[in-house]
Length: 223
Image (cartoon, rainbow, N blue to C red; front, side):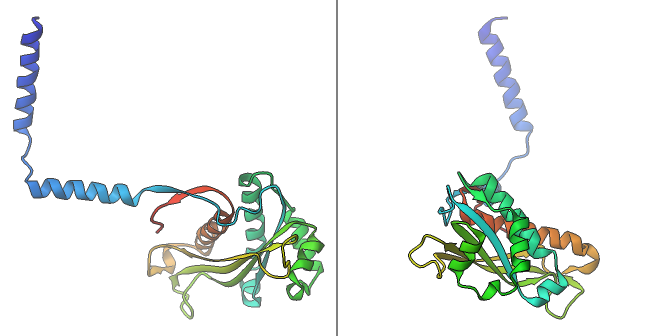
């Protein structure tokens, strides 16, 4: 077939298809593009540098302090946090050597007065260059006084002890972390189990805390 005749046939077919489509007003087109742009922006990921990059090529220990109520109601939480943050640091921080979480937990158990020790002495006894000291001051799965709604919160002050710092008995850097799960407000107790809520809450807390120490990609607009 003559190339020009083929071109004209394709053009006529395209025009026929175009006229068969419903016509959108300028307002509708604008709204469609606006919605697409909104969701594209909402789903964006961004690269984020470490807020504290000083763990590279260092020996590090992670310790968690929690109040008696948390230890009574959620006794496995501190060990879970220590083990998982230690694993993330070992995987993602260049040249780091993280102290075995089992050894850290054993030291805490065998040293009942460790929370009153000078910070520099903690680093010396654990024999590391850096200590990530997580003071878990709030941990709950429900609103206060309401067991029928899921509203998980894990909040902590995170301090870094530098054994070789100017003053090892003062935190070299501090950050506050607050994680919440689930993201849906007013979620009833029958909608999830304790284990599901605790798993989601710990994942978010561990992730946000670990991200302080290495380059990572995170949502531009977290839930």
